[in-house]
Each structure stands twice: as structure tokens, then as C-alpha cells.
Length: 168
Image (cartoon, rainbow, N blue to C red; front, side, top):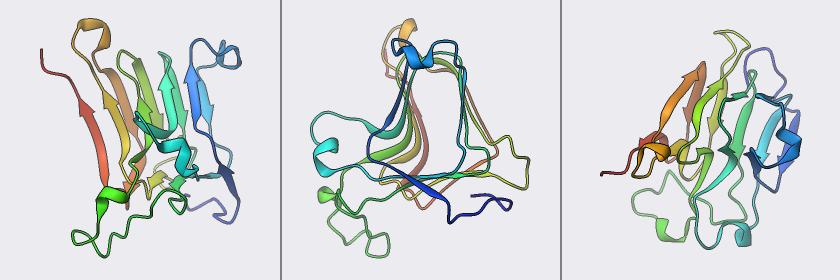
């Protein structure tokens, strides 16, 4: 977390936070603000099959994810830990790819920020995939549009940010 937060306050998530327009708990909600550090610790069975997998999945337009100076962290102990010190000689085929935040195709106007000020950045770290992944598919309705990332650091993840448009 940031310089003004106590990193010993940690909440563990075993399930991703799926922000959708069809879930009534997000009706009228445009900001999700963390109130403590979050460690995402999925079970191995939760990251089998078709992905992508992430701690936070954004499937609703006009959303702000405010880390508020806190950290979003992956605990990969259940899914095949990635040993960055052994890379590239370690067997990465056994590691499940989990991203910090995944923005679904066609979602518009997503902000990932830390509103605590420049000296208290939010962080996304230790993910086996990207800290933030946004994918677009062919067709105007599925393009990546209006993503803002501000005052966020991404570290110790396999990748930082990825914004991929499908080729037409």
C-alpha cells in the first residue's frame, strides 16, 4: 500500500470481484474503492478451463476502480507459484495465468486510479499475468476505449499493462 496505509491490514479474496451491468449490487455504482489491501488467492480449480482470470473483472461501462493507496496482490500458492528468480529456466507451463484487473471487450470509460495523492500510489503486484489486461475484439462494439490509469504502480507481475485490439 501507500505511505499512509498499514500493510498489515489485509483482506483475502477467494473469488474474483465481477463488476457487471447485470448484477443489481452495481446498479447506480460507478466507483469501487478499496478500503484495505486485497490478496487474491484463488483455488486451482477456479483458474482451470477458459480464461482469462483476474482478481477484478470489469464488464460494465463508466467504472472507476480506486485503489486508494492500497495494494491488489496475488497469492499464487494454490495455483502453481511462479519463481521469478528461476525464470527463464523454471517450467512456466505449470503456472496458471491470473491478471490483476481484466477489462472485457467492449467496455468503455474505465478508470484505474489511486485518489490518495501522488505520494500514496496504489499498487497491483505479484500477478502471474498482467497487472491490467484489456482486450478488444473485431468490430466497433468490442473496441478498447477510454481507459485511464493514474497513480498506480504495477510490479513483480509477469507483465505490466496489456491493451490488445484484435486485427480486422
